[in-house]
Length: 164
Image 1 (cartoon, rainbow, N blue to C red):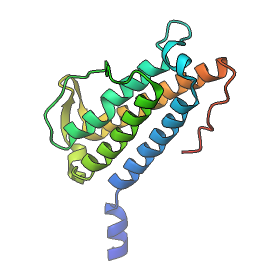
Image 2 (image 1 turned 135 degrees about the vertical axis):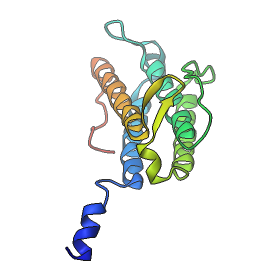
Image 3 (image 1 turned 60 degrees about the vertical axis):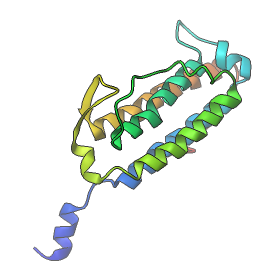
């Protein structure tokens, strides 16, 4: 086996930087979905017993930056979806942008080997760091899809899902 083959065998499938870029692509798209909602419907429109999209966006805000802060070595925080200051679309978008910067800042502090470690996110959700990050991403995709349903039911064309 030569050196090139050895490097290929030990190279990661995806780097931490690639994973962050992938997630931030999803976050850019979710931001576009928030922007697409009229103010009133963002906070008051719901379908089939689901929550308004603003409540879903608050959940995503409560998970993303605090979750990465914890992964980077911070103390476990209680999951808090209330975010009383997020009472307008402009404020949700501002908090979204702040969270994006915070994710980038704390992500840079996470060494690659940390992704294999076991954690209990928010003091109650067990898994590895990588499975927890995947949950953050999957949960966002799930809620964004609900936002797409809402937008379509309101007669609003949602952003193309591939434009991340």
